Image 1 (cartoon, rainbow, N blue to C red):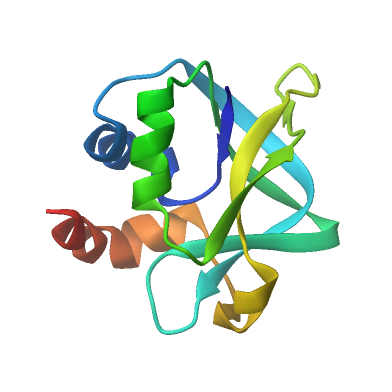
Image 2: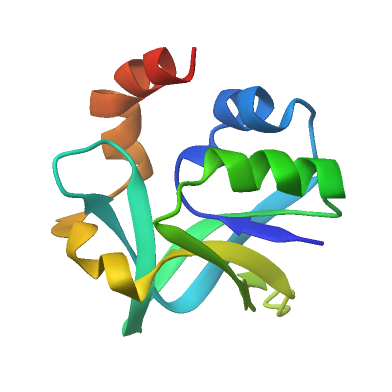
Length: 131
C-alpha cells in the first residue's frame, strides 16, 4: 500500500521515529484538499476543499507493520481513506491518506499549515512530544 503524507510525516526524522525505517518516496500533490493547522496546536489536518491542492509525499509499498505504526501515531480525529494524488510525472497514484473526520471538523483552524511554518516555529516542540 502507498501513503500520501502531507504534514509532520513528510519530515524524514519524524517518519523514521514513527515507522522505524526508510521507505521509497517521492513528491506529489492531491487535488481537492487543503492542509490546515489544528486549533491551538502544532500539527496539521487535511480536509476536502474542491479548489485547493495539498502538497506532500507518497511513501511506497508500506507493510502491515508500517501501517500499524502509522495508525497508532495518527489520532482518532483521522480516517484513513483512498486518494489519488499525482506525482512529478503527472501520474495518478492510488494511495491512502489520513483525513480529518467530519465529526471533528471544528478542530481545523482557518490557518494554513505549511512545511516552512512547522520547520521554523513548531518542529522542535513537536519533536519533544515524540520523545
